Length: 390
Image (cartoon, rainbow, N blue to C red; front, top):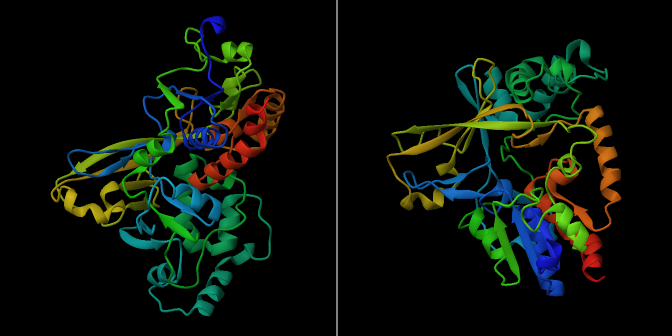
């Protein structure tokens, strides 16, 4: 196979943000010929989006994706390929039939307790509500949550939501270092310097990143399928540098065992109304609602209101569960056992001289989009560029 194929200078496995960034940088800085392959039928990885014809909403196929960063290098880079709306992310939660702003802030606290506490009074109240756990160092999330924000707020907004999210009693989860509580009325979800959504959608942004004749994309191609030329063994034999962004345990045939992930299932609900929730994301923090949150996509883009259907809206309910092999891996579970297993895979990856591992799946890490781009820019400079100069 290797003898009959003219291979490019670089093959990238995975058309997500990590792979696209490396491809763009390789072409820009070295003029390399790059082939991107992806087993999916679209580019963009989990940030891929498409337009819903009935409602005019931009659907984020793999769940809500919101761009935010305080990293100027990343912000300058992404603005080469897209402009951003002035969208500011704010989240609300339904608890016991009432809607509250999140993260927990002074507005949430005063609404919850039907009070008008000052910031100092609210801090004192929460400290008192830690009860017998005040001054201790709990090892599990349940007790740590009570210690950090007091039992009433923890049980209303964190306990059941987290239990649904992880399918595990919070008493069996490791303690959080902190839980976000603001003693003012700021309900902006992110604190980053820059925030927004790509003005004409995620997919258009990513198409521009690789709009170069030296970059070729092959979709529906499995890196491990030896009947196609860009497979793992053929590329190794040909000495072609590879950037691999798939699951690191899959690369090695799961020979050390499977890394554990959480996945997300979505249930689509359509309503004969223009706006169902009045916000893009509504959390459901009570145990009797089986899903963790609902996403109403039209509300991410109020600037497109004139192009949207005023009588129809689409909502995705989000259900969290542990992933099995074949599911979409979203969030690394990251138990001590998983971390130890990944360290063994990481050592094997380091011994692959012509392959660079990157992205969420390739490094068993949870990344926001700006983290993916930042690590891709660094990986290009430190790992990929030297391979292309050989």
